[in-house]
Length: 325
Length: 212
Image (tube, rainbow over all chains, first blue to last red; front, side):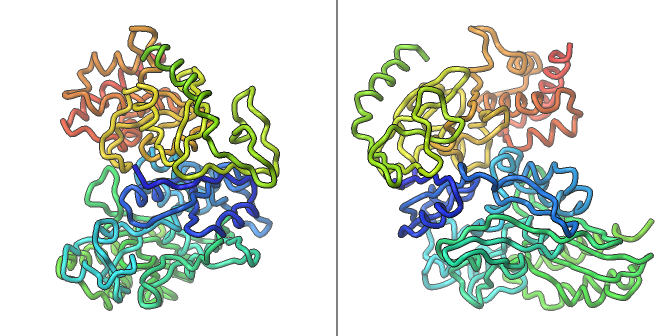
């Protein structure tokens, strides 16, 4: 049982925003992450603001520019099973299908997936860690086999989302409504690196809510994929993952997005690997070079050096699949 | 589960509902109505109003469970699993991990398998809730349950009601699933006895009988 909280069920986004003004108010989208955090006492909540009765937040719609808008309350199941999504952005559908378990995909939402809290066992457990306003990262000298090999600073969580890397590879943006109006933030800019602030995960300000995610039209020749590696194959969070969005002209890479999951505290775009691929044929030499380059800056911790060859091998396999047949 | 218990809760609900602190913005205390699809006989909520339930207070809600309407008092923080087991005596859905990992509490919400431990009872208002009890016809097992017995799809049986509901949800969506589809659909339900092979056989058997 969690500590008591008040519960509000607004009918409109405007009422959601005003409800979020209350001290200690937080959003309930699918609720899977929220209820887990409340039960574990990760953070305290005075008021839960449910999005369940707000009209128009669920579903996928076409944009005039050929892109898609995905409502924040669209379930992961609906995203994974959406024919247009799978047809245009197969990597996004693959990422959605790889999220958690069927039951959690039926309940979890796109907006909630982007805003979920990290799974670090020190953060979730009874440790006064930096991210909870405490004094240090307990993973540094602790059990860090699932932690970051890239981008860690002060705090060494890995971002748990599968959708965020996939959306980032597609240059998607989040539409955020709040007291000051509506703003658009690239998914690439949505998450906060611990070097900047180890106590927050997203750039959302108090009172703000993601209402939609917009994905631009797929460029001609797009190859899009998502690979997730888990310790348990049936369902788990990633220990390594990658989203690819390559634009191919014959076997030459014109544009490349390589975004790593479970590598860093934020979804990790490897621009160095992209630079290796761009303008070059997708042959064995360039694929190996890209995989090596993606891991060049990796700084393993005491128990997660296995991730470096794991990421390299995964990238080699996934890039090879992108070759035209 | 007897009707007496349920009636007890109903009369208790009426008695205690005066304690419920309910307000809608811009209005005084009114009857609690949640969601446009909320049951008949309740005040239709004005489009402009929002529901607010105060922490620590119980409020009357109606849940549609196994074809019946159950009116009862809940706190906002109570999970659907807690309400099913501790307030309604429907103990098929089991308490396992209580963190959305094991699947022993799986129920159907509008035909779709969900973890009752990760669902607030107040979020289930207006939805069709089904538990393994609801698959019974009196004392007769439903098809999925009968197939679990026939195929020995269990050892200790603790995870079974959740497995049954996951299978029921799959077969409603896909009456002829292949083995891989079954494995995928059942992947959110752990069986610590490791009866998986028999569980998958049971789902296949249930699918065959459903078609026939």
